[in-house]
Length: 495
Length: 121
Image (cartoon, rainbow over all chains, first blue to last red; front, side, top):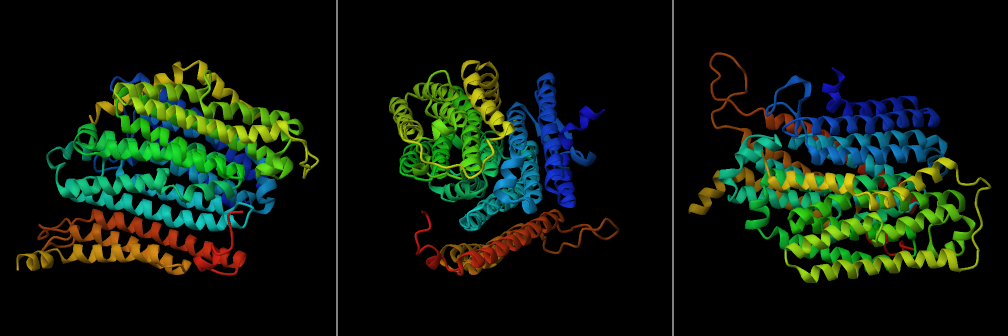
């Protein structure tokens, strides 16, 4: 009985959790609620994944409120979004287990409860975007998660946090409005908002100017959200000044869900034939991805704030993911999707280890980090492991994704691209290497701001993620296997 | 002549696009943070028009199921835009709240003054 209602529960539970935390307004109680909710999410998304695997068609369709699709809102889950749901909910659960002391230290006890409210709303929005099959419903969830994100960023301790939140609000709203314009144009042409239904009806009219304009608006709108290279300007400041916990959560989930949305629009609504064969989307996306891989990585080298450096590195890593989309072949797309997962693990581990540094030492600048590797050996060891994964050393997750991407590039006969992937990884060696050099080979100067050691739960979660970047680098069956099946479904196009 | 006729037949779209572009222009061109939000609202409002105007049918009635109501306007866009208006209001409110905080923290809401000092480091 309850199994049939899981798709609704996936979104409803965090939404009610958010209301509850807002009513409770007590930091510890709110954290308790947020933790319980966050721990329930992976259970539900794992059960959903099992259900998807058990069905013959590979699709679960859930009519929200009993109103049959296409008129009612449909929650439609296949392997691709089951994978994203699992990723978001697992990262949410890990981050919440890590959160309480870091949040209290960085935000203060009086405002901590609001942090959990906003976190749960953000989680609701992200899970909602991933689960729903209704175009306008996606917009609503997009705005739920975005508005919560602006507040999460503004809660940062630095006074520049509000400024970055404002800048993100302007750009994010433009992005979401572009998305709505695109959906509006599609609605005018097809008369439906159900994504699968739009895909069915678009066949005869896909060459009309209105539909092409819709595709353009959707692409630009979503690219703003996922921080595709020239549209990434909101991201570095937002990540640099948000509270550590929020940065870790957003870096490993928010942009990933936007990438998923782009995949959905490209492959399941418009279809490979129109987007990649008729229109030059592949060429444009390829150019921008390569520009991101080099441009953002080079900028990262010159940052002195390590959080900002990692934020620029995120822009570069999103370049690898969109590169996989641009290749649009089985192997390349598998690489893109698996990097979505791998990058979430890597950046989660890196930002959480920085959170430990902020908690104990109150530092994020590279020049303050000299000798920190000897003072905080466990934290910095986790940072190093995750950093090696970011570079793509064999035996880590970063290597797996780059291997698939390089193979995908071979298949399309793009030899220079293989060289570009390797060269851009070398830039990652430089910026991660800078931190490691300062942390291990300089004299200890930093003084702790708190007598407390880094709490076990913070260190434990950081290490869990760092270890996962090794584990999934060796055992690729689960991640790459699932990504490859998801790529197959996406490439097969709308059903 | 043909163009004029076209323009008149689609005047709702011309207004939509005028509002859209002027809103976006204000966001980009103005340095005052409140004015930027005004532009953003204008930009969002243009989308309301984009959705609602195709829902109207010439000679159509309100959508009521009863005797004598045969051709009626599409009610769905109105419902959608009601949601979009709520989202727009929430965004504007949050944006203005952030501007108040920025004014408290920096003493100005003009972008050129804010970025005159080296904020990055």
